[in-house]
Image (cartoon, rainbow over all chains, first blue to last red; front, side, top):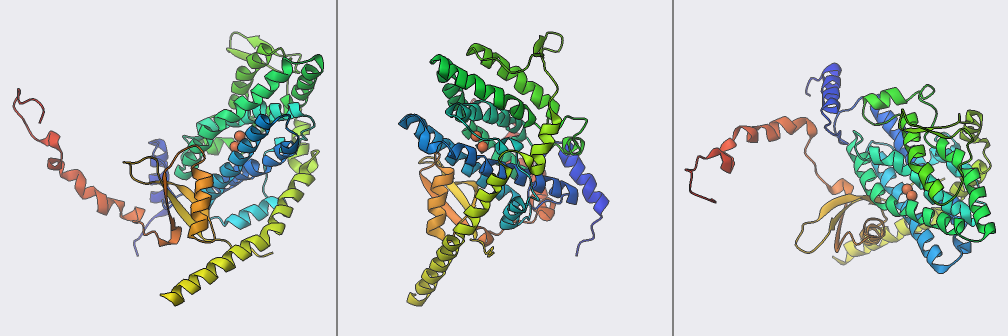
Length: 317
Length: 95
Ligand SMILES: [Fe+2]
Ligand SMILES: [Fe+2]
């Protein structure tokens, strides 16, 4: 046995982080770094998977075949994103099925945005434009996060995300240029999705208990408020371009800071939804549990079949 | 509830003829055939590959990161393995 000293290991770890050297699965890492990553990546994975549900709601009712094919392709991408992220969690020694069970028991969280219902076709446009748009804002800096497998998963995810936002914006643009009824439908959807989209970046920096440590470990590269500001700056001109009004009377461009000033977020609503009292929290978790329970026989049958075939092959040789 | 999992597989993709297979990621599958099919769905949806290798993750043998110094340090001192170590008179041109 080699004699190792924890503080030496910690020092070496901190030096690597400072030198922007990625941490890989078998490298020594502080227990808290591991735990933080397991929490963040699994929460991210759950969000990708649960995020399929509000969109799945519209697959059979997409207005035409092109829109339907696009929506299916996007939802399939999200399943892939979930898989890349669950794989990254596994490299940290977490058990995949236990991780998923934590979602089902409510121990693990997912993005609160997916607890809002998709009431009209315009909502599918908003999900792509605003929700995927906010996700991209969050995920691009994560391509440089300090844990190698997470960063690599994010590179793949970001490549695939680029069409998600565009297809959403295309849906919204088409409606905004349509009949007065269609335009009203787009505006109504923007009114409902704008604030929940801003909440996606999480609590304000003053309230966020994990931000400081995550920034030090270079898991996060920007604070929640920085990312939210970047999103507002990027999105407001897009809304103006297509003639929709962002539902915030205090929205003004601040020349000095080179970005928009906007109203305070309704944090009561945010915490209500995070803590399980949003419109669809119950429905989302029920759907996930049902998928797991009703899929058990498939997983067992596939395994039994694989074992039987392996035994037969062994006998034949 | 039964939580027995399918084995974990590592996926390697050849992006085009003439290039070697490169690690793309991992996935779970009941057997090799399913691993190939899942890898196709997950890792080659945008023409990223023309050939797939899969291997069960627990069959991979890896070097120990703690041995990295002992394994890779000695090569740092052998600069004469690099062409820039050698002096070549001006005018030789490309060599
Ligand atoms: Fe995604
Ligand atoms: Fe997406």
